[in-house]
Length: 423
Image (cartoon, rainbow, N blue to C red; front, top):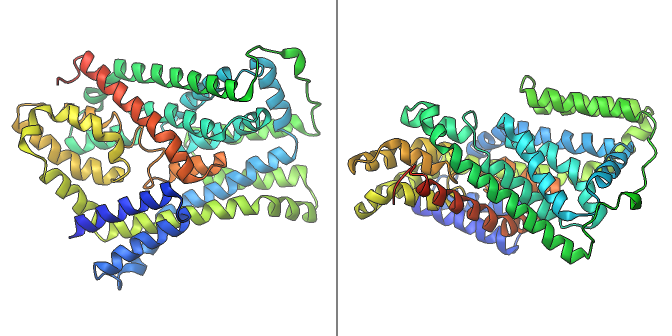
């Protein structure tokens, strides 16, 4: 019963968001509440909701102050010269811009944090996309592909897989290096194609056109603001200080430097409050959803049921099958439930058919909360991508899921070709 209700709740949530019948905030709150009541757990529901909100609170706080921080830097005129500089470097060629987006996201994601990757990449490049009239969904999708394919030994899915199956991280990751390179090749090819499509849509000429872009005069305190932004990003990427702390302090300093009067500070905060409040509401609603689904045991039950009902005939082909469905499974299972609940069961099944458990772990990394995490309603990063890009959640998912799923399938084919696992 738990598993059935869990599956129905998640599928209902996805249908509601993707069809845009209701707002994500409404769907994320009411879907699990209805499920909880249907299961007779209404008395426990407030505690479940609070538990989920508590876990999401740091991300929500980070998002509020990230919006304020980058918004205030824009108000101070810091971004215009930077955008002009990028335009002089790449011209008005969307193909170069989308490839540059993928490259920047890939480099930023080397620290293993999807949230940090999106918090830096998207606000930095969104003004450039807006300057040229490019589709913001392309920005969200390109950054998502680069971060999703860039699974590393120190990223969450790899560490979870190694811990759950008691395997060395190197045993899982090292044979996958060639597969990942193929995946990255797909990311840059897809980014180039998306840029080409945007170029044709906008009717832009693919030339550098350096003379057409005038240099922006540097605003007052430009270099001081740039230094502050670089320090904030550097500290955040280092992982020594929580991002919410970095953005809170950074926001206060930007306000103090550029808008010294209390009236000006209040006006600037109010100017960005709408966007911040809207996305924080969605993030809190996501906390309610994951809190109820996890604390009630629905996700755990769904994981056990899914693994236990797998036909035995699939056993010899298990790694390939897992790899093919790993990305869509990110829409159903949060990372802990899958890697600590489903994966050990799948590994036992694989062992029964003479397959090494490491192959199941490698197959899972080809999509489960790697290419799947930027579109899953079970991860805060999805809401960060949509919110920072200024794109509706459902629109982001509809646009990006085919590309992310394609990246997963391309890597699956590469894994077969390289002998990581056999068909």
